[in-house]
Image (cartoon, rainbow, N blue to C red; front, side, top):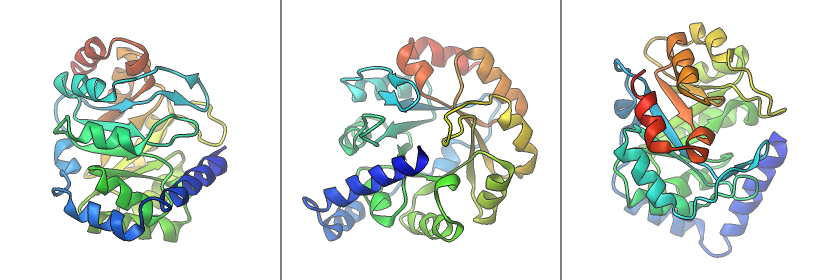
Length: 256
């Protein structure tokens, strides 16, 4: 599954070059205002941070929400206290787009994450050209040398790498490239099975100065409390927000 998602994302990136050259993407990225410092926005505080996700669908659950107005949803997230917003841009299985990312950038002033299967520099440049401040690097999908190269490339653009892991080995690989924003995904992207206790079993490996993000399997306030008590600085929430009442849920989550 993961290999297929990367192959599709890279094929779509290559297809976009037919209408916008890499040189043009570089120009658009350079013309953006400086990226927001996501590390400052997500720094540990007494209550948990929420990284709220705009997510129409997923390979494991199919269609979740139509989200015809991603800008309005993003505004709701920001107004209700989300510290950052994740925008799915993968189009085949998640029904996202770079257009969503660009539109949301014009509407909110919190950091934006481009959530996609990023494996080359073009995709990071596209993220910056559309106003993203954070880019996703999934350890399971990248060789170590590529993980290090892409992290450095994005940081040279002023962005923050969000390095996602799912095992002890992957956490150590993320730390080896000096990840400062490190996620533990409860969902195994090879099988799409979830383990809500995975974060708690791995968090002891992560140094205090690294921002710790618990990803996936957040259904309600009890799940947020579970992750927070295990040591999460940030919870990434998508499905629960897009299928429920995002304003009410954020209000509850941000009491934790």
